[in-house]
Image (cartoon, rainbow, N blue to C red; front, top):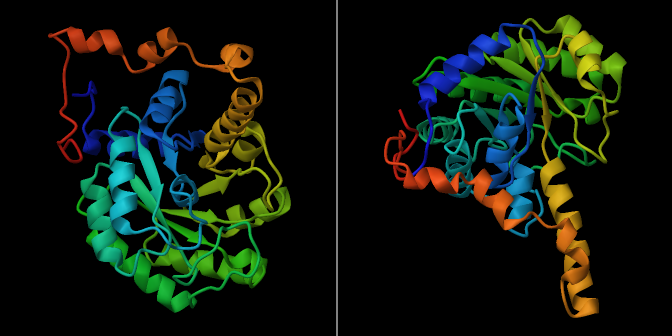
Length: 298
């Protein structure tokens, strides 16, 4: 059982309306459903699900080893625990954009992004990436747009061309992707304000900025991105990095000390956990309940 107020279609509609406000929307990455609930409680605008994070969570490198079934199942779990819109990384479309869009939309997501790398993709901030042709990516976008049932489901086109072909060809791809029907452009691995600004000048639609740590992009703050005209920012791996750093530290402490007394203050308390999972609400019969088995909550 799960307590939510909005259907998937309402989340998508609200998301579209917020994008039109010109305010920068902030979507931290969630590596599990509990993290998504925390993102919502703190007051962020939405939830992002990184393909790299899901791959890492399985103990795998982000090189296209995950499947559509794995991504859709996990993203469905994450998206349905809050009233926030959730967008997911679907890599290169898993070989069938029509099936991918249908499956992700059915799971209740508000949108997804598709990239122009070859199937054996690499993390967007690593070198030695290979791209499909502009024409092939255009066909993927068109197929994706045609496949969606809800017109408010956001089709986001990510281009990795900057680190491969340079900025001029990136801008050319962006124009082609928008003409193909992409609702939003995700220009990956922009180096600094100048490159972000050049993308904004040629783009006619919504833009997504990726503020991932330890990558090729300068980390810009909310005001800088808003002033540059960007509509959405993701922090894809921040929560996983924070969690794993502290888990590693804690495990080492238990291993070396033989007990956890020295790290109790680093842990979320039982009381705080129960607050986050809304433990007491499950004993309140007059609340609106949605069963977890209901796909998409349409």
